[in-house]
Image 1 (tube, one colour):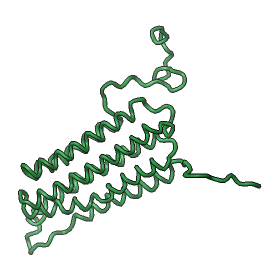
Image 2 (cartoon, helix red, strand yellow; image 1 turned 135 degrees about the horizontal axis):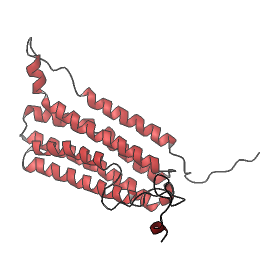
Image 3 (tube, rainbow, N blue to C red; image 1 turned 90 degrees about the horizontal axis):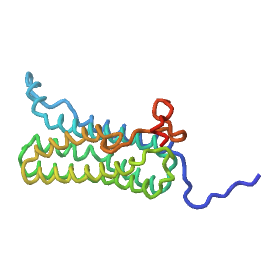
Image 4 (tube, helix red, strand yellow; image 1 turned 180 degrees about the horizontal axis):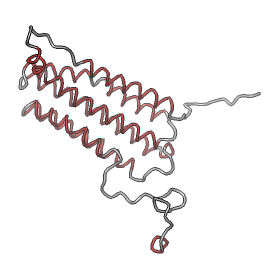
Length: 237
């Protein structure tokens, strides 16, 4: 029996990419939790020592929220992706590369804030965190750019505005994290941390796309309105 000879990079389904991505994201969250430790303290001073490491709690909250919405948006993306090509694999690996590194600037930021919340080290730390977070958003830009170039990678019934909304959200995040880094360097590091805490909420609320201008969903084949109701006379005109 003859075998078909494969030429070049073959497209594949999303199963392995999703499994690998879920594993990397799970490890990224675990690494964040490892930054929370029992602080050194004297007898009777545990409460004070726990309160003193408040920057670690803020860093964990900001980064856990960020990785969580990445996982959620990643899942929503792969519900719509039908097959993978080399460019989409590369964009996905870039996203995982930046996500896996998030525990590093989180730990640096927590240590710097704990030492001196308004000091020069804290300003450098917020710039480092903002830079990596912005790079993560730009990896999403690359992901959606590949989907825009290769729409055949998507399921045929994907919302028309999905890729466009994804690109807008990704650019908005990159600009917002960059602005937060500048704010933290020029004004106060804690103002940047406040932005780091708020931005994951924005991404959570817009997981299904930006709300403005979305038309009512229709069945991809029959054109019937959602819920199975037959088209009205106005629908047929």
